[in-house]
Amino acid sequence: MFLGGARNMADSASESDSSSVDGAMVAPSPLSREQIQKRVESLQQENRVLKMELETYRLRVKTLQEENRALRQVSVNIQAKAEQEEEFISNTLLKKIQALKKEKETLALNYEQEEECLTNDLSRKLNQLRQEKVQLEQSLEQEQEALVNKLMRKIERLEAQTLAKQANLEQLRREKVELECTLEQEQEALVNRLWKRMDKLEAEKRMLQERLEQPPSAPSSPRDPGHDTPAALGAHVARLRGELARLRSQLHDTQQEHNEKV
Image (cartoon, rainbow, N blue to C red; front, side, top):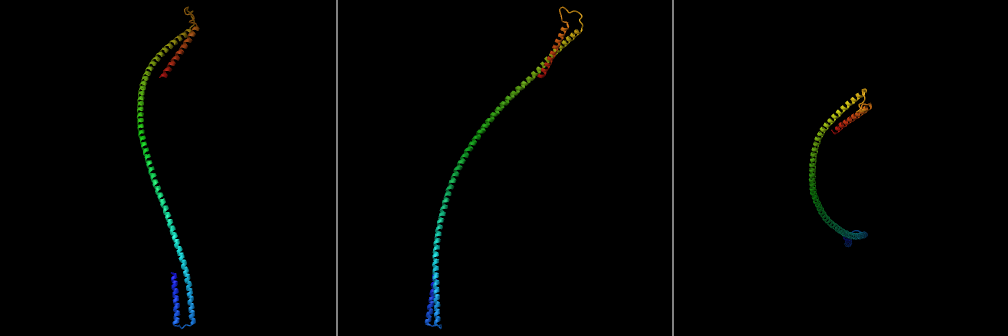
């Protein structure tokens, strides 16, 4: 593009120079030869400058073309690398997706198996618990029935024992009343006998005291020798006192025994 422009500019300059020279040959201008020569030199100088610029543009165009080719190559390389990376990423993602799908399927299968196993285990345990519950209910019912029967028998036995004890208690009460009556009668008879004996002993004691207090008036009877002597009378009084003390003690013991029984 730049090369074509430079060529057009060079062609235009050459045509201008040719036109100027032809014009000078055909129709000489009023300018002098020296001026024409300067004009030619100036145009030639401009032509050299333009050629230099043209060469510069050509070099620049060549450089730009090389840079363009390099950029195109870099773009191609980048695109190829991008395609390779994209393909690698796609393959990697595809592998990961396949691995995840496989893992998901494995997990789903394991979950189903575990769920089925757990369900079966729970069902088996539930059935076992139900059976144990039924057995426990039956056992509890049997134990309750046995316990009720045992308690009923025990209650009946206790009732029978209570009735027997009540009967025995009534019998003991009757026997106690009878015994108390008999004991009271015996005690009364014993007391009466003891009082009679004590009265008799008291009478004998008084009689002996009177006899001791009386002076001796006549000799002793030959059939009862020594009976009226002071020693014999003292011994008889002592014996009567001992028997009286024994009767009093016996009466006290009888009364105490009666009180303890009552």
